[in-house]
Length: 321
Image 1 (cartoon, rainbow, N blue to C red):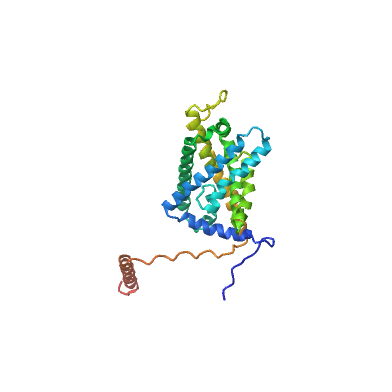
Image 2 (cartoon, one colour):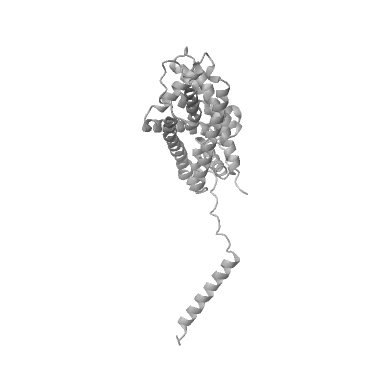
């Protein structure tokens, strides 16, 4: 009789154990990498809009001048977690979370080309979703809320994200996706909606409060700020000269690279090395695919080559040769 699946509980709770999470992430990674293009792209659009909704919620808190710095950032981070909740519970494809598919790649369950194709599709889909939300929020005159305080908060936030140098943004991206992927990891530990929410909120709040760089969130913040600046909706005395299309690219490139290193390297690789490489994992890896049967034409060629080799060998063994 086959052994029953291992159902180790974490510290006596109903949460999945870390080894079970690792096993789940590997299997999900294979499914994500091989999802049909249209489904993957559409779910990515949903995720871009979802993270944008979290960013919109965050800016409402950020615009309140009566809050102290720490309270404002922590509370803003908590409400921003709406975005990841919509992705993880509602179902969507988020670039930063998909950095964890490297766990399946390191098992050779998926090819490098599949990883690159997934990341490219999801990144572009996230961008489309974020830009779509920017348009709708702009048309709804959301920036005018609070006497224009929302718009001013978005512009100030964008300036603070664009002005740092490449290396600074890169390392902020690394730290951001360490926390985001840990939030995803903890969400996978939960068996209910409440469990998943409880697991993801604090890691997300931490990266937001610390001012780290999430490339998909910036796909909402920066284009929204650029649109406000381009249409002259700038408070007097606020310098927004840094908010240009080149400035947006200056942020998104290092933020994206940093997110890959943080999520794939410091979370995906580390947990794979511990629970798969060192401890063997819970599920055996699938056996290598057998070589495909030769086609009839190829079989004829193979048989002909074998017969020719046999005749040659026979002549070599003949005493008259």
